[in-house]
Image 1 (cartoon, rainbow, N blue to C red):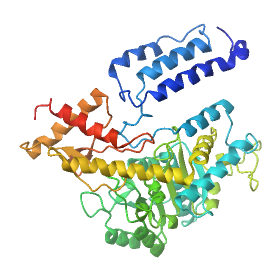
Image 2: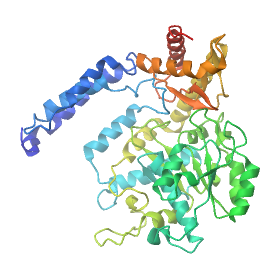
Image 3: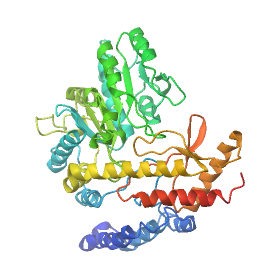
Image 4: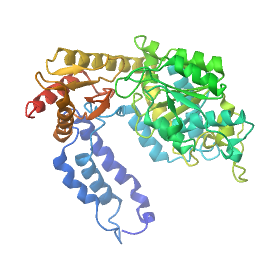
Length: 475
């Protein structure tokens, strides 16, 4: 097969293969192991030298679908608990297919009024969903990390202005280190964002009052006073090992008292606002200067999806716009050019799957899903507490359950190695996916049930498989 132009009359045939495979694949996710390592041999079919003459779209896509449905990690299914990863709701997946079908250049209103208007709508809907002020500016990003880059770039611009410097134009040369303070709950993506921005990942100072990482407000207060107020506070809403959160309202008080910038990492914890049972965790988030979250976590839309909201919309354009390229149009009221409000220039229409899922299920549907996941996590926590060989290590607050295997008679100094081996066995087994992490110096499991398909039966299966595998491990 030669030029793609030769296939212009059969362009839909390859898409038909994917559509035909979708029903059986999605319908079988509940029964599939999350990963079957025996199927890894299929991956060799992706390899080989670059073809001189292609085999055509139908043959190529047929191979990709066959290998993919067999060898993929089925993270869209109900038992992928290893990281904080959602699936894709039916509406979101269809919306993502639509985004690929239409293939919009979504950065400029001129190139796609559809994509720009959809992004404006979903940003407004998300602010309504989370209870953020309508006046906040916002932009969609590929991930929470890039959302952090966006929010912290705005904080960096704000901070540099207080030193009389336009950092977008002049850079950081000659400026002191930007003070960034957080608790021990801070996620590595925040440090990565600071690294990307040239602020340095290890310049962030942690103020923790215990080995769980809870914030030391008094120590941070003193450090803010010493910094003279021109500092950035990072509040964490939903920590990945336990679901724990910083007291955002108290940190907002500190930021207000010292004139600091408050940035909230709400990657998945921002969704706590949807339920009266968990909304107290986010109290004060509406007072932040910047707020970030992930769409491919609790919103259950496909990768890649994040969003960044900023109290002062003008900072977004000052931090990312004003390129001075003659062929690029200026921003014009409602005709928003989103590539001038965030780190990407070339952008796909990632608003479309978000629009589709929010339109399909609305506030009530998402509240029901979040509350079901709260119930599922609480149920898992109860199962752990009732099991004689499992130990719950932190209260269950959101959708993360932190525990370890602790059979009677095994000394403390053997538990980390035993849990590490059990984690490896669980991933190798593949029926349920939940690896290990480190919490308070201990090797732990911290499954996060937030896939829209997940029910109590799935976490019951996790406990069954864990204990079955543990019985085969020598203590």
